[in-house]
Each structure stands twice: as structure tokens, then as C-alpha cells.
Image (cartoon, rainbow, N blue to C red; front, side, top):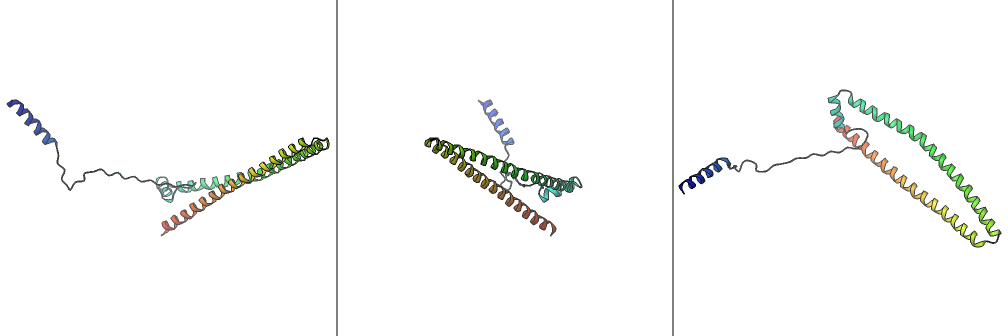
Length: 171
């Protein structure tokens, strides 16, 4: 019995030595700090650009040159693609006109042969096809214009932010 008490006391003393009482002046919790930053566009933020310049002298001018080259390339591609798209649309309209003219001639011919129901059905099919083409064309055009407007607004915001950052850096 005595020996058991001695073992218990010994174990208790070990626990007491291992246990540390934290005074109230020491912090009792862990703090975690996170930082997130985001920048969108072909050119990094002014802070990142300055960091690149520090790490590798001349890097900022190379990054700006890459962005300028990309812009020039995009302008060249668009100057080719826009006229080509316009010509393709014109060809499509011409072919559609030819098809509609032949369909109208066929409708008149069916009516002349005495097949009025077939002529009416063909007229409805032609009319609905033409109407559907115009409706989908207009909705696609609106969606394209809306997307382009969003791109322009985002570019404008980026330019305004870059100008403000440059103004702050200059002060």
C-alpha cells in the first residue's frame, strides 16, 4: 500500500514538472494572417512590376514590350478577321437570297399546278426559316455587343486603376 502511494506521488510530481502554467500576460491562442491580392490584365500590378525590376533589371521593360507586341498582334489579327467575317456574312446572305427565290418560285409553281395546300405549307416553312434566321442573328449580335461592351468597360477600369497607381507612385 505504501509503495502504491509512493508511485502515485512520484507520478503526480512528474506531471507537475511537465505541466506549465501560462501566466495571463502571455498569449493563449494562435493567430493566422492571410493576404490575398488579385490583378487582371496583360500587365502585372505596379507593385509586381517594381518587384520584377528589382529581381531582374530590365524585366519591367521586357514585360511591357511583350504586352505591346501582344496588343499589336491582336490588332493585326482583328484587321484581317473583321473584313473576312464581313465577306463571309455577305456570301451567306447572297446564298440565302438565292435559296429563298428558288423556294418562292417553287411555291408559285405548286400553286399554279393546283396544289394550294402544298404551296401554303411551303410558304410557312420558308417564312418560319427566314424569321428564325433573323431572330437568332439579332440575339447573337446583341450577345456579342454585350460581351464587347463588358470587355471595353473592364479595360477602361484597368487603365483608370493603372493611372491612379502611377499617380500615387509618382507622389
